[in-house]
Length: 621
Image 1 (cartoon, rainbow, N blue to C red):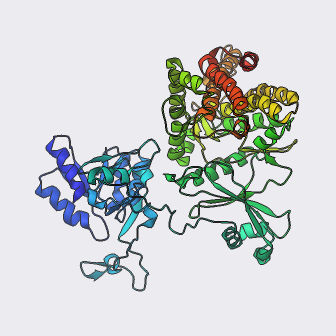
Image 2: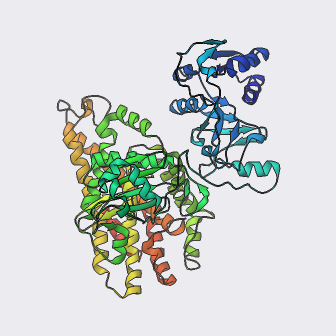
Image 3: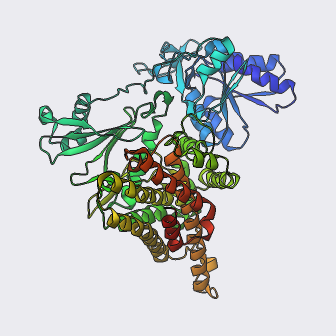
């Protein structure tokens, strides 16, 4: 078969130690055909049962996996003999790269995803019989699909006779572009869909969906009241669609969020995995368990429909960014966000669960690869060079954007931050904590929209929120000029909230650390062997350790804050605080100050304290 061509080439170049071939139940193509080819070619080979592959990987005996493909969709999803999907899942768990070998004739850019590939079923006798004799109980039902579909997220590359297709900067296999290059001609466009059973909802069908889920229908007053329900689409983000579904009375409502297979603000030209919804649901559920006062409850997560249904935050809750633009002040915001950050970050870190617990949690949660790669692209890469997605207020900011994109020190700083983002899995992060992902009243605050959640550096979440406070601060002079309002008190509150958020975070994080105390085992970050009561000067040593750690988190937070500020003015997605200022000249003046501040935070983070940050913020105006 095609995959054996890769094995043969490795063998001929002296790089193959051994090839293991699977029997490929139930039709046994592996034991009948692949094994024959290995013997015929005199390639060292071993035949194993399909269900032995994971054990072989666990022993460390497998360096890579190559399988064939009957069809490869435009996004890299591919159909192959049944069992390929489970092999890919096991490979991912054991960090073994898996490739599919496919001639260009099997690449199908007109098929958007694997969910559009029809899977036929084969005769039941292939499962119930062996060598013409029945081996299964009479009367048992049989499901015998001939193929399964492996998601592109589990794949390392597509090997063809014209080269290897690898993921692009968006984390997508550019199958259409590859075929167009090889064959010549235009890139074939495909219509995007979702997994089997997926239907994109609208304001009418979302009501039927809610009625079909008993736990949701009960919150809305029962399915019998369906005729009285209403729905409104309120999503103002870049990624998902969000509906308020109101039941038989205004006090009976839920939020229903659905992820489509593409970036909402761009459209079908930018595909995006719906696995992100699973990450968001699990992150919300975990965060609610840690900090129920500031995270809404999730009622259901439906992977097939890429839907999360959660508590509706009733009026007067509004998105924080909208309230800030209106000139509102939220006196308890810093207290609440500081508590949320301290609690969720501490309780998901090695301080609370130990090293082994953290590794298990990271492995169980996964890497949220596509959303992380999107972040790496739009925050840490594109704003510092030429990119089609970049846009800014022009020509007013052309000079400072040119300076930023040619600043060698800044490029070193952003790449150091990017490395932290990619390699430091300290805690389970929200991943995109800004003023558009918080809902507030004067007395309550809730964090929502966790679709970017991943295990990363704590400073990324903290810095994201602090950056948005500073962007809001810089926007206030613009709003004052445009509306004639006095925004002085709100400017003071935003700077106070910046300092207080960090102070509350630091205080509450250390309180939880001290409440838990030193660990009796060796797995935590304050082990008894170092800081136990019987160790000389242990209290002073622990305090110094804590101060060093908090200083590192503070420095990281300022660096990430600066990066967030720059990307929100130069990159693909801006903030309404600044974008909605109608006067270009006024808006550019605010944005210029924010860009200068962002650059200073990135370059000077290690030398700053909260008071000196405020001095820098004010001096940039």
